[in-house]
Length: 78
Image (cartoon, rainbow, N blue to C red; front, side, top):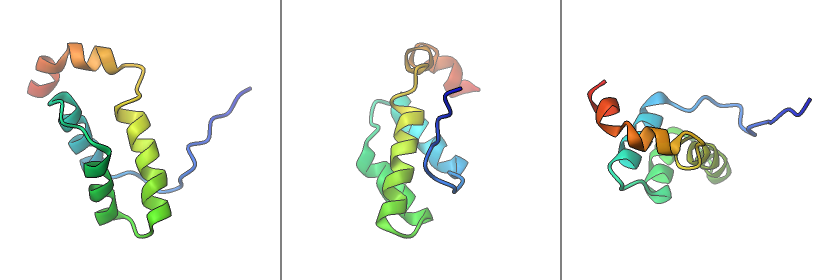
């Protein structure tokens, strides 16, 4: 069995994920902006960097990315 470890032990706040998904749907997602949001929540550059990698995987490198973009209108009103 192949086990994937995400490499962080902290919970990513949902408000940060929401901001990231909203900016992604509005075509203005940037790693710099997400890094700023994460630095408000976490201390330490390494912790912010690791969490940013996970957030980027969840939002921008998600295999459901095309589905989310295709259903943008529905998701914005949900």
